[in-house]
Each structure stands twice: as structure tokens, then as C-alpha cells.
Length: 227
Image (tube, rainbow, N blue to C red; front, side, top):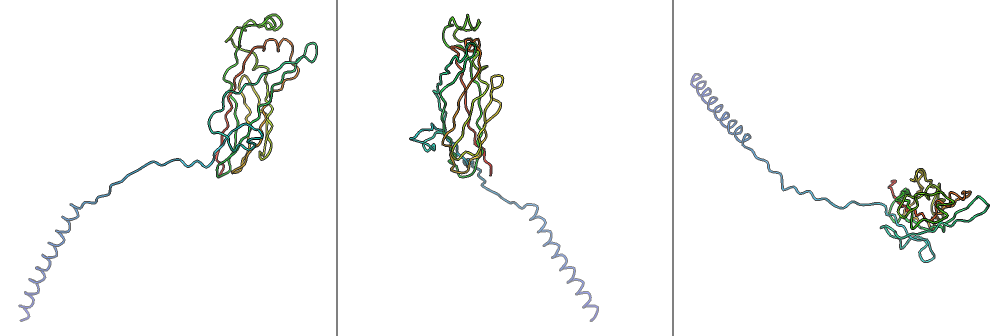
């Protein structure tokens, strides 16, 4: 009795083991043939969220805080440099100030940098007798290189209202090397930014060479996020 029970138990155990191995084998086959699908995946580019927005306009009674200021370029600004003899051999030169207003109409504080670049300094029009005889200018035909930028060592920059700093931009070798830097809170404006070339103590020879010259400058106003 005991032997038959033992033999049955062995057969049952072998049968059970066979069943287990079949199940495990089926599982191995299923893993080797498994498939995972991910998709579809779509990537789309959105717009850059600019936190600051600087605008520039003309400082006048109609728009003192640049509410109507523009983002794009302002062109066509012309200022005549007037020479005045103050002594026998000395000349002062002045030009009407360029009055601009700046505004940060963005939502966060920004640093405002104003940079200057010289685009050209050229003779404009025919030579005059004063240029040739008094100034000794032998390159004064229309389109020749001018000498006026050499006499513009600095522009005086005056900031008023909410501007927190002001400075003086300086020309050096035909390019401005010192920018004006100011900090603007969100919504702040500078109601008046005066750009005034002012020259004292020029010699008559210098002033004569610079006659009929035309200097073209480009002004860049740059807003940088300071969050």
C-alpha cells in the first residue's frame, strides 16, 4: 500500500513538474515576442515669451513718457553743427540737442544699454575755399573721407524722470566705447534723454577742415532681462 502510494506520488510529481515546465516555456516565448508601442509623438515650437519691451520716441509735450513710442528704427534725424568764433584762433561748435524718451513697457525690470556706432564720416558737397586754404584739406570733394568725427570726442547724455543713472558716451577712433547704462523697472520711462554734442576750443584750422562734413551715427537701445 505504501509502495503504490509512493509510486503514485512520484508520477504525480513528475506530471506536475512537466506542467510547470510547459507553462514556464510558454512564458519565455511570450516575452521574446512582446511589443511595446509609443506614439504618436508630436513636437511643436511655440513663441518666445519676451519679458521686456523697450520703446523709443521723441520727448515732447504730446508724448512725454513714450506711450506712443516705437519698437522699430527711427530714421531721418539731422542736426547741424554750428561753428562760432570766440577768439581769434578758437571756435566753439554746438548742435541742437536730440531729445528722446525711453520706456520699458514690459512686465519685468530690464537693464537698458545705449550703444553708438559710426556709420560714416564723409564730405558732403563741393570743397570750399575755407576748407582748402585755411584748413589745408586736400580730400574735401563730395564723398571723400571727412574730418568731423575727429572733433566729436563726446556726446553729453542727460537722463531725467525715472531713469536711475546717466553717463557720457565717448567717441574713440570713430566708434563709441562707453555705453550709457540704466536700470528700468517694469513700466518705467525716462521722459527725456538729451544727446548734445558740445565742442569747445577748436582751432580755426580744425573747424575749417570739418566744414561740409556729414557724420552718420546709429543708436542702439538694448533691453536685457534682469530677473
